[in-house]
Amino acid sequence: MSDPTKAGQRTQYTQVTGIRAIRRLPRLGKIRLGIKVKNAAGVEYPKDVSWFVCPPEVQAVYGERPQELDVIIPVEDPKMFFPFTLKFYAASSLVCKGDGMTAERAIGRVDDADTVLIQPKKGDRRCKVKCPCGHLKTDENPKGECSLKATLMVMIPKVSMGGIYALDSGSIHNVIEINSCVAVERLPDPTIEGDEGDPPGFLRSLFGHVALIPLKLRRVERDIEKPDGKRVKKWLLQLTTDMNLPAVQQYRDGAVLALQRSNQLALPAPDRDITDDRAPIEVTDAEDIGSGPAVGGSSPPPPPDASPAVEAEKPPATGAVDSSPTVSGEAQPAQEFGAPSPGSPGSPERAEEQRARNERAASAAAGIAERQPGEDREEQSEVVAIETAINNAQTMMELDAVWRDRVLRNKELDGAVKYSLQDLLLERKKYLKKFGKK
Image 1 (spheres, rainbow, N blue to C red):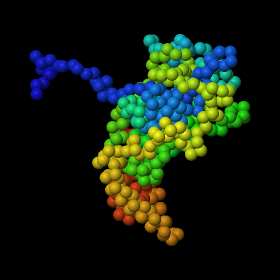
Image 2 (image 1 turned 90 degrees about the vertical axis):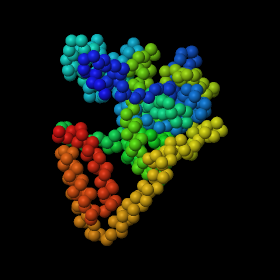
Image 3 (image 1 turned 135 degrees about the horizontal axis):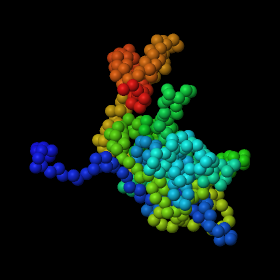
Image 4 (image 1 turned 120 degrees about the vertical axis):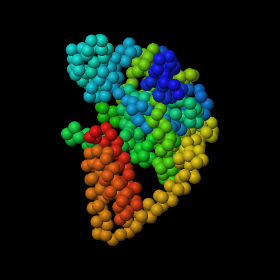
């Protein structure tokens, strides 16, 4: 092969480094949590509903007013598929975005009441300020322009695997509900005194990951307490799974290759962070209202009489999507639309081998449980010492040495115990990659 740097050779420039490696999923549409209705005076206002306001292609599969959707999270990082921040809009433009500690504010919107943390340089369009500030919308400041905004991005495999659907919410209850399922465990930061870290979300603890797992996204009626102490019923989001234990083990143990590929994908930014030709949506703490009809079609009309839409659309006690034949006829087991292909990681063929390993581990664990008091004290002491050594490892080389010498080569250590130590090893590796000594 000739050297293009030599005289007489021309280099063919066809791709730009830094861009060619990006793989971004397209956004197919938006799913909303509310509609616009008119009062007796003809004034239009947003109203929360008990179903998902979906585009026509989703309604064709789930019916006009679905209360449950089959979804898949496309990537592992919650910062990509579920960003939630404090945002300040003015004239339909995003002028400030923060995390509750610091924020980036447009230079022209900084006032005397703001605490500027880093002075902007010449040519900068934004500067870093303290967050929250006096613009935050609260009970004491109901006219504040800044409020919580979250966007959940998921795939709906029964509709299309060609991209994601975005769902916006401004409810702190919805944010807590979703984040409690998908959050990544955060280890304590040694540079912050008293920092205890954050535990992982429920689904992440259950499966070990959240990407490419068949899940259920539902509207569920909850009894919540308002700041004034009154209790009201609201239709909130619920992200969960209907899988039994064998199915959970199958997805937990057999998705390594798929996860590696999903980590190479990027998701589109929330559209209001890019361009926005719509007026800001005023949402309260417990209300999540769309700004108009669903993308690609008109919103379903509200119930005709004066009774609230929320009360008229209560889901069956069994948690089914709807009692109508259209929706119930589409309901399928979660494993059907997300099951791995034969021979792939997580397939029945590969799961059989893992099932045998699980049985051996369960047998070993049962043997430990049947011991008389005091018999396993020595082993418990050894496990505690190994856990301490893993957590105290300061470099990847030191961590590998602990795992090799004290776990892999330890023939007296029970197999089930070795299996349980793997999660601790992986978490320590993540920590060392970020904070460890170079």
